[in-house]
Image 1 (cartoon, rainbow, N blue to C red):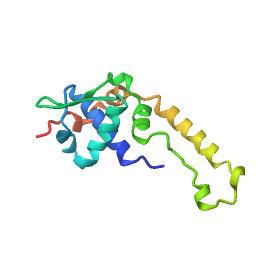
Image 2: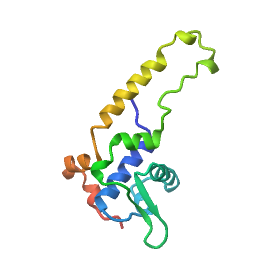
Image 3: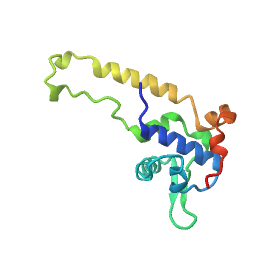
Image 4: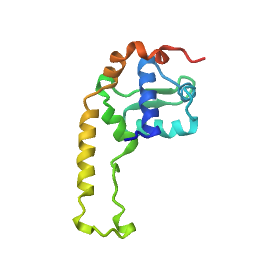
Length: 142
């Protein structure tokens, strides 16, 4: 199983913002080695999903829209990946299984189990559980 770069960037950015406890500029987030343009798209998704708040101007940037203990990994995954976890392309491929195919149901069941696991973990859990390993969060970007 692979997690998309969008989801990875979203999680890392939210961890960073949560730890800074202040408004964080897109340029500061991009200094983690992420394409600014690509990251901007991810941040728009997180803002649209009300995980982050954004503001413009001299003191602009991103802050958490909710406390870190109210943001789950499921929230982030859904905001970035959306509902299209699996989309059957049987019609386009002229699949021989047709209506007898159970793949959609199997993948939907797997998605629900995956999301159930992600629902168990909040941003606060991750930061507190890995505090010593997350030194990159505490470093000031210059």
